[in-house]
Image (cartoon, rainbow, N blue to C red; front, side):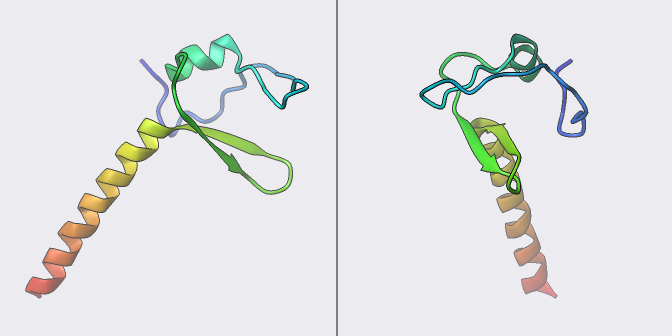
Length: 80
């Protein structure tokens, strides 16, 4: 079973920033997240000292779901 949104307490190892600013995501993390070569990741700054990566397709699915909910709520409000 793949970890979900709430399974956020995993430490998958360390990585080092290379000369070109590149990092390697540890194999354990790639496997746990189902990452493969060519996947698009979004990079978020979390304060001054933290970076978070998110799979674009998962964020896109969540945005679509939220958009659909907003439309449903708008329709309900129109009827009331």
